[in-house]
Amino acid sequence: MDKRLRLASYNIQKAVGVDFRRDPMRVLDVVNTLGADVVALQEVDKRFGERRSVLCREYIETETDFRIAPLSQNEVSLGWHGNAVLVHRDLEINDTFHLDLPGLEPRGAVRVDIETGAGPLSLVGAHLGLVRYYRRLQLATIRAYMGDAPERVAVLGDFNEWSADRGLEPLAPDFDVISPGKSFHAARPVAGLDRVALGRDLELVDAGVEEGPLASRASDHLPVWADVTLAPHPDAVLQKPREAALPVAFDPSAFRFARERDLD
Image (tube, rainbow, N blue to C red):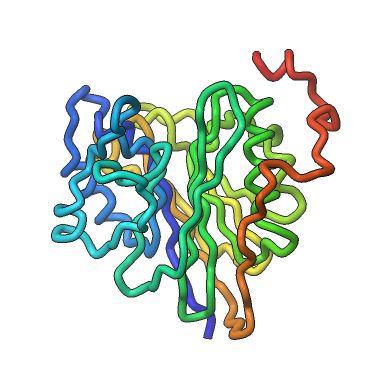
């Protein structure tokens, strides 16, 4: 039988809501409403200094059904470059990785390999840059790290892409990029910035945006979710990330749109 999983992504804006209050417990209450198996979080750590987490580890352990993927490289952060991943306690975490991303400012993605009832699954959490030229480079980097067989991979996060048909070219044709709905701005959603990209072994069942009154206040982004099935594949093996930051054959000039136009 296929195993259905709910994958979610949530940019929590350092737990500062649209009412300008920092309320980490409100964010965790929203996370608990999602019914998710995995939640990729963005902007979970403060931006400067030690990058201290805005969410309390103890509260996650006692007030949710999740465990924190071991991604932090210090004692105070919850993730890496603001990206953290929560995994339901019923699922096993096999491995974690950090992926450096190119850009005008330091960016990184995280990868968490989990074991499901249908075999292994690799999850990438990312918060892409504000300029499309660099977002394409970042997506190309993620795609290169996934190796030659990304069928059992899901990429979750704030893609920061306002267009429905531009900027996501590096993931084609290996991924189906899903926009579950308008997730930004939470007070008045006008854009689907938060997305889920599914490898070919993952089938989309349903997707949506959590639009409840609590989510509409807790952050400037609404959380998105996607229900997927992963067909049983007992012999599936996930590839380790590659060392190269970009594929050898990658050429930014191959994109159809000039860099200057992408700054619009």
